[in-house]
Image (cartoon, rainbow over all chains, first blue to last red; front, top):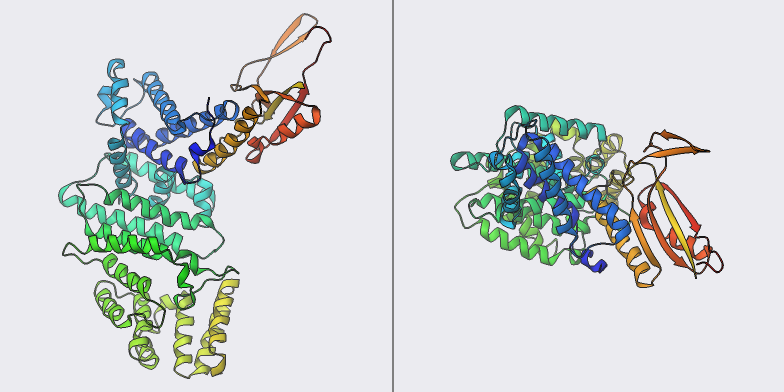
Length: 426
Length: 118
């Protein structure tokens, strides 16, 4: 038996995790959406059996094929054993009830094309709006991305019990509503797709808006969000410019991921990041998708945010950023989403094209918004503008207020950074 | 050269709690370990054992079937190896990645050599 570690080299990142997601999708098609957990159990068992055997006999030349075969056999056994006990709400159910047809049927649904389609169906199942957003995200990570419950809990800074509850609720919603394992069509597709993209973007931001820095799982959340969106984008029937726009946005942001943190684990803003560290390949890929996104006459939030992100990614340095174009993009964005956070971000851009003073005047109008009291960047942004406007007293007062509310090491560092930048002004 | 049996003992199914990602990492370590043993000609055989089976207590011709208890430490597999001496056999046993990701114990036992018979 040839044992060659290179078979499963590090180049194939997350191989098992992704194969897990594929297998669970295929088996969910086999058993119906009310049996997602059964599908997961079978895959988990097959992988475990593989591990146990390989620990003593070495790794076969085609480990993934091996796992697939075991999973398939387990599925056949269960179908034979529980033929009359379980209700299989899948459209191939009748073919699976007969010993004559079960093997060829399973053979057919394990082809590459079918697997890709099943993953897409699984995405739409996990992101069905009858499931709460929280649970959608947890279920997606568990069944499609092969995260363990403890890894999901770690990524969301919550307990395993909590994640387990979300998963149980999600599976129950699916069972109760008798959801079909399919990609919606026609008018329904547009609506459901936008809900799917929303969930994926939520998942992405969970990873991107790092509150705890030394947590590699967070980068993986971003990678997974991109992978899932690529599955949707690669489908020939779903032609959606929003999907490409979201893909571009996530890729642009991810290209800057690793430069947002300095060697002391402190978060750096755009102005202080080392642009040489930005991932050029990803930026290229992002531009490619953005071009796709703009071929149809549609403008979504994702289009605007992706274009803003593209401006940052392609600027030579912070100073030469095309603030004018970015400002006009923000003006478009406000028409769709005029939330206080967007207005705050717009004010930063406005301070570059007009002046800090004028930006502060705009912020004055929304200063009483309750969102800001717990939004850390509000304090540092406004303090920076005050410093730039030679109002160091006001700036320092804001930073003092912030210090009372936010006292993690990272927050303190960011406050000190603003103070240092303007030490000459005080 | 001497022959040894290395018994791997864990509580229940020791790798069940690993995520697919961790399983993949484990598989990579296993590949290195077993590949190394095979290449150097030190591995004579190895097998995992099924969970379950029976425990039979015998006492002077009287047998009693006891329960098989998975929650106790049980032998989950064995390696049959050749090594220069016990020290080297212990080194080989310790290099097994199985306990990187789980808890348990290893028993390393020289296979008895009978002069003139083996």
